[in-house]
Length: 246
Length: 166
Image (cartoon, rainbow over all chains, first blue to last red):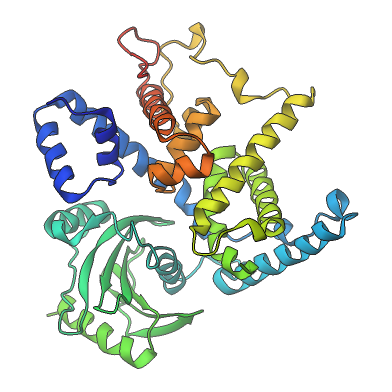
């Protein structure tokens, strides 16, 4: 049976149920032209993310906060709305981005922002699921240029959901996501350091509601983020550290 | 709905706007107008429905209106619909490897869908609802948009082997 165009795209966009996905994979294995197109479309999606995801971490520009009185100040409703918009943006910029800090955001902050963006995702929390863990590790290791490991946190009550590749100023970053049986999520952000520095002990940072433990180990920076109390997260961070340094 | 509910979506609205509008200033104008409109029309949002899809729907309307108003101002010459459907003959064989440039060449109605699906990861049904068009139209525009992008990125747009997927 010929693969329909609809299914080919739904496959590319991960909008197929597992059973149909497997069926499409089987069909693609015998249809090199379609397989090539599917790969090209997937590459488009990845390229779009690589090109535009950095916008997610950009500071909200100051001009957002200045009201546009000249354009719409005559109308009370709009003026009121502008004030509300200003408050929203101000709140957001203050809480999430701390836009007035000119230095590049720290590892902890970048990890916390990535956590805040992806942890609430219902449909697409990860790019590659834990069902393909081997592939996930191999892929992310290759992209980061370092052998990565996804710690096993079942003892702590967390299962691996999967992971994704993220852009960062230094290049590619890996994010592993875990979830407990209450649906609470934690993410491990792994960044390749441009300059090898000394290893560090655990450091803690509270980034809005997201608690982050981070440390540097060899050429990699790690940050474990979750909306959990500090003590609880420390136990998990300790478990992660021990597994990465057996 | 209160404004705080919208705030977490601002980064994604900015990401989409940047990809859609091309340059940062046009994109931030688009975000600002979208936020104003969302606040003004917040009573129209159905609680429990997907706020993100609703915001993208508003951004779509704002963007289309901006394009229309630009068309009516003669000093603004750039208009996506006026861009050639294929690259002009003198650039045949030119390889556009720059994704942003390639996106700008896509007709708006294809670019929106390629971005909502590929970048913003909306489902086809959500795109259909956000843009107010049938799902079949969403799919055909997605097919054409992606194929056009692929052709642009590999520089084969002008070769006779390329078929436009209907």
